[in-house]
Length: 340
Image 1 (cartoon, rainbow, N blue to C red):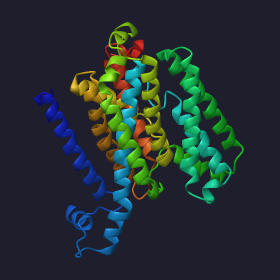
Image 2: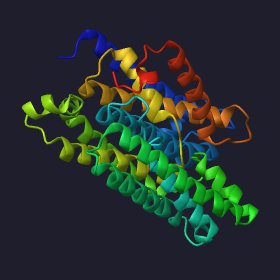
Image 3: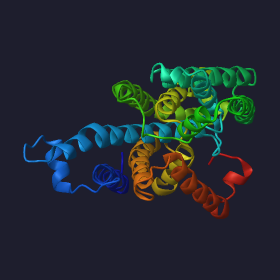
Image 4: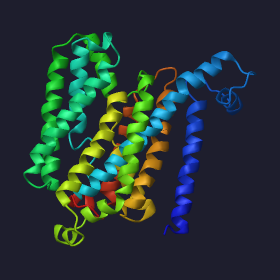
């Protein structure tokens, strides 16, 4: 059973999610009061038409997308760290994002983005799928050993990133700038038509992974102990790996590469909750990511207003300082590459 401390933590995270959601709706290049936001959301006739358009057509879809993307990245990072028993595992150290980078670069270089906006997320998804399959095939022969998967991800990341850089060097400057901003992580130009599909894919995947919490706990044990529970380790790792990869593919395909969410959120939740039980960690990571990323997105719109900066810059700065803190305060788990 969940004790009172955990109930309080979950309640606090829910409150933070609601507050961050409203904060994201109120603040941007122009501040909108809470009353005006409420009127816009509930369809009041006593409201300026321009404000209603800003809230309903611009900020609301963007805030919902940042919430679901943040939750998805945090959960995928939590699952990767658990099944690989490595605190450095996340969607990006496994090379998953490099495939998206190459796919998007190809789309911009070939001018596909000028034909249909749909080609950008489509090419990103195809690129990530290819990178996931390559990492999987390189790892399956070693029975998904943690070091093998991490090294496979690093190798794939270097190869795909180098290919993308080569295309940058051979492309017109206009294509390079547009692709570069997208790859930094940006919600400014995502296709709103993808919101329902992305929301459903990520939410369903999070629910599935949450229901598999006990299976993930078993997978984290040694092979000998896992066998006593009658668990097929390789089969379950394959399923969990591809499910978490689908989440990452869905997130990166709509908003670009946003780093460190899948790395720092699970670490923070383990410290706060005080357990490695994935039945509790996965939903906690989802809640935390859901309010952390909208907060970062709001900062990206407010700090240098009216200039909008890519959200990936904000998360990289915060994540970098957080990682330095972990290195200084860690009990040795990170330095030794062991999952605890």
